[in-house]
Length: 91
Image 1 (cartoon, rainbow, N blue to C red):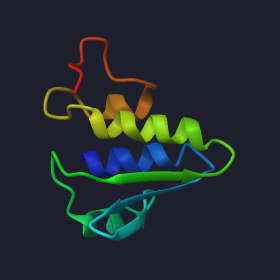
Image 2 (image 1 turned 45 degrees about the vertical axis):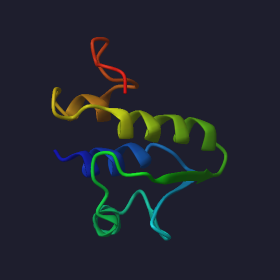
Image 3 (image 1 turned 60 degrees about the vertical axis):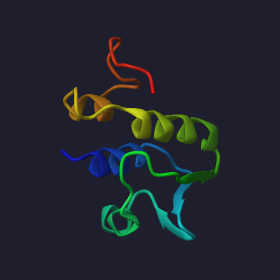
Image 4 (image 1 turned 180 degrees about the vertical axis):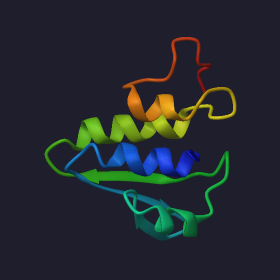
């Protein structure tokens, strides 16, 4: 699974509308194809926004996925768990 898929799957756990903006382009995080159009690379600056009943939890979860080091761990873990493995390096 690719990081962008993990991000989209994690967003689907929340009822809030979650968007990511890069270079004035805003997309819904649940839509993989839309996320791909942003061409976000490691180190890119993005704005994440959430509106809804669980917006705070949604923002925390999306931030966690964005900070996860997919090069060192199985991406499946970030979708199934609430946090990266305990030995995951912090950003």
